[in-house]
Length: 541
Image 1 (cartoon, rainbow, N blue to C red):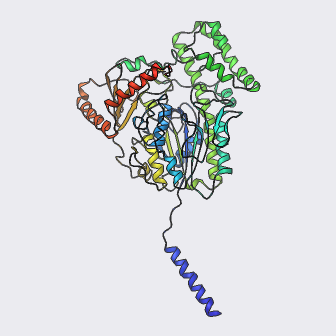
Image 2: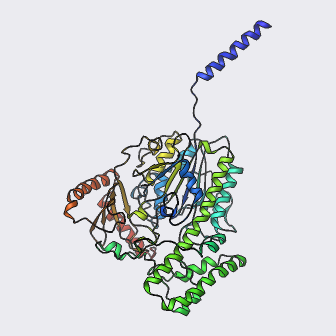
Image 3: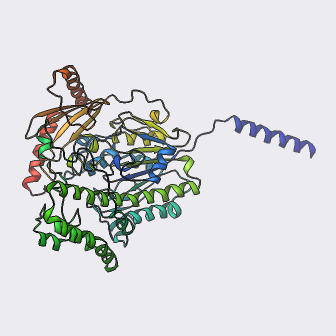
């Protein structure tokens, strides 16, 4: 018996030694992908503290990496999301603008994660399609969604209406899935996607009551006159004073517009306002009216004697109050999700990404919205933490794009990406090894003529220069020195001092068009298809 015990002890010891020598296979990381809609990097305090404070989003930067030169391939909502899901430029995945349909034959990275053992879930705003592929569970807003008492499309229960504020509801749905529906034996990919701070900027009650009393510093280019630039900047319809809705955006009550003789900026202005507040229940509507009425009364007194400059300044403050108020609830929700991950021991093996589908103008050049290749809309916030891989508190200035997310997530999960994806994995950058990651980014915007009237254009952007071609009903080139002209006010395309740089950028742009399989033939094809949509009355202006 003693001899048998000794043999068993020896066997156990041998097995233990063997197991110790056997290489440990690392557990695949979870991925939490947080994306807001139209969240300008200027409105995140980790990037810029002048406008607002976002302590919870900043926590991701403190524990991870903040990208200062992250950008998009096409600055508009649905196309940006299609690029993220497919890892392909708009002209390849088919979703070139908000009108063209997404090519559903595309393979998306969530499908590949799901097929390789990941549990997948999407909650919030997708913007296109009501049945996203590759998700075990989803609850998504139809199209743009609503801020108050939104409708929602669910995978398991079909459409339904929720009561409450949309940002809080999306956060609650996300936390419920993490707590009660997540399979602890599987790695997961979670897409936590906010509607906020998309237009028409309706904050939660707690935040509009606070932010309506705040004032914010004006951007230096608020009164830009677009001198020295081509027709694109001059003809765009994104001016705060001229093109922003008085009721829907600035919250001037329709009856007060009538009393003051203020005409609607667009035919849908008052209709949008009525549709928004019309979703509120009596209690919500009372608080809304009680809060915005004093602002309206003060405006009624001031308006008859206000100069054009004063009107512009007033509209800027109104814009910032509501826009930044929307972001406050996003930041609170991010904090709740981060807290859950930490409290439940998930934070150490979870990649957390915070980004937006593109940047946004916060009064720069007198504008709101996005679309242009100019920095405020072209650049997007990107903050990533991955404990053990990314050094806490690090910054990176490389030209990374939303095109790169798909390959990054697949590589992190140990999955080989399809050969037709066009991005690059960011993991070498995460590890501090990504020098010379990308020397230039390619951009192409298509939605014209349409709302905001930003002309079609494509271009190449390096860390120092930006070469742009505006086309369709114009043929104009612009060149900017991003280091010397941070506000992009001086087009140096015809400056002899930049002749060699211009020639080099033209050559590189042509090479990028070939690399990404874009061409003048495709430009013409999409114009022709767009005109067909125009004739059928499907284009919104």
